[in-house]
Image 1: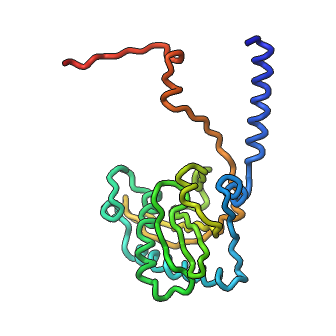
Image 2: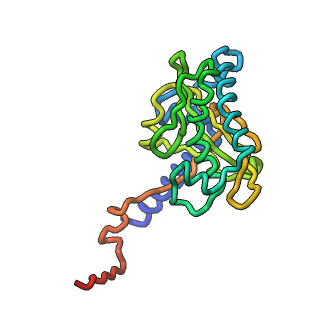
Image 3: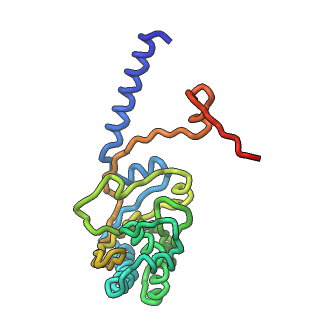
Length: 237
């Protein structure tokens, strides 16, 4: 390929990438979900009776969990016993969030007789957004993401992230509310957290930006023409 052709191709790619990044900077979350998954996000309407009762039901479930683990700390040992994970040596807010995600359905069961709108509260399989599917008695749905943090005022772009990949497409099957619960935590001892509060977020208008990532699988990465040096040692027979 001639130099001028390479230069022109590079200029076209640079322009395209700049335009893509600009187009996907600070975009409302509902636009991203609707355009990539094909399902609508329904904003919470505080004037709608069912939505008001939904918020009351969520408060009943989440308050029950939060008060339990305000009085009784979430420890690394408790996390491992309930979540069954030995993979992570660290025990930080991410693990507290996973613990909450695992335990919240049991607090739904404990409070089921008090609830007016929620029919089921199911933790979804597979990794990725969202964590929980709530079914309303009316047949409507709500998707719930669960997070934990010690400092809401300090963060990074990956505090909340969404990848419209295969797992997420399998999970989001309905038009629904999309909400996020964040638990405020305090590490009173090393690897020992208590819940100090929580908040519920409507994700409809939360603005997200795309973080570009380019991928290659092993078949592409280790092509013969890409290898400069290769050394192999045969195992002793």
